[in-house]
Amino acid sequence: MSDKFEWVDFPRGQAQFCGSIRGTDELGHNAFAIRFLGGTFYGEFEYINCLNASASTITIKMFGYSDKTNLGNTSEGSRYKFNQSDVKEISDMIMQLFLRKSSKPFPLHKLVDFKGDVIFADDWIQITSV
View 1 (cartoon, one colour):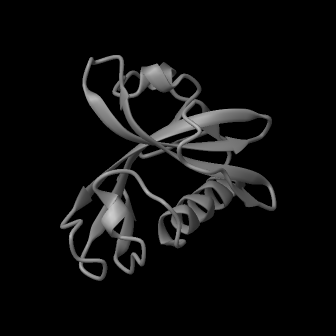
View 2 (tube, one colour):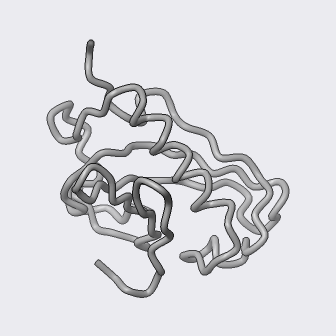
């Protein structure tokens, strides 16, 4: 894991930007990591209009990979399943990571004062059945 971006502390975990990671599909993925439940889990985001801090949109595409090189793998078994209460905590950490004033990876580095939207795609996270 790159030390280029600092870990951000939260009551039940930590979050960090990872920059671009080459995934299982051999493509680059804009990645972040969450330390939670005793593990480190990776996710992928995409951005639109990253030159305007108030009009930008960030979409969280996928989350829950225990291995960062597995980013891009769409197989159901490739990601950890979380319970519903964990989903709320994880999404809160992700939102705060993007909204805080800190160093961010290219091209988000221009959005130190990001005021846009963070959207979670359908099926961005896998949820355990009760």
